[in-house]
Length: 112
Image (cartoon, rainbow, N blue to C red; front, side, top):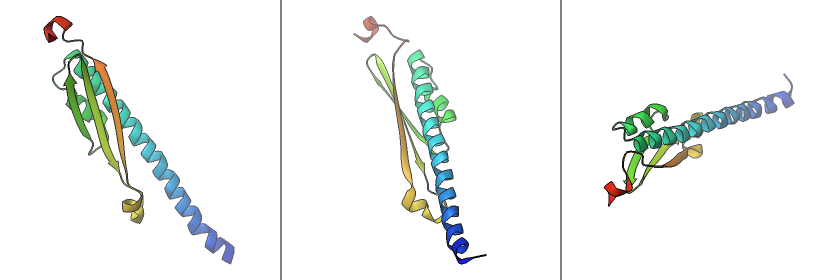
């Protein structure tokens, strides 16, 4: 092994770890978005377990918050995504997603 290879190999391994972490973070963000959408649709239909439905789709350890405001429902999903290896604390990010849907289970007359 030459000196150049000895210097280049750890750098390439670090780059590969960061690229893999980026792909995993993107996948977790997409799961947060899907969980918010599914939860908002379920809550808009009047399903009583909309938060449980959203948690089933969300990444492990995510928090799901459901609020109802008049004719709309708002679902917010948040999850922490840790960085790779020893860089976990330095590269951790908080992923969030929000979704809003019009309620289908009530009419305007019922709200007034």
